[in-house]
Amino acid sequence: MALTLHRIHADVADCLGEETADIPVDENLVDHGLDSVRIMTLLEGWRRDHGVTADFADLAEKPAVEAWAELLGATS
Image (cartoon, rainbow, N blue to C red; front, side, top):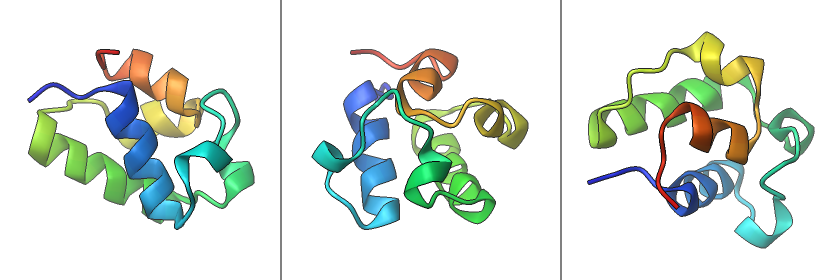
């Protein structure tokens, strides 16, 4: 199953305990409370479920949903 922008957005919102509507896809997720432990949790799930090969540094460099979607090759 391919990773989608919607799935990334929903997973991030769930991880932060927020609604997707409250997290703009172009905003820095650190400003919404995302920390390194949560990034690793998300990454491990995407590796397991979607075969993602990115590493922590890739995601930490640009912590925004749309940046991650591009980096992870997500479909729309």
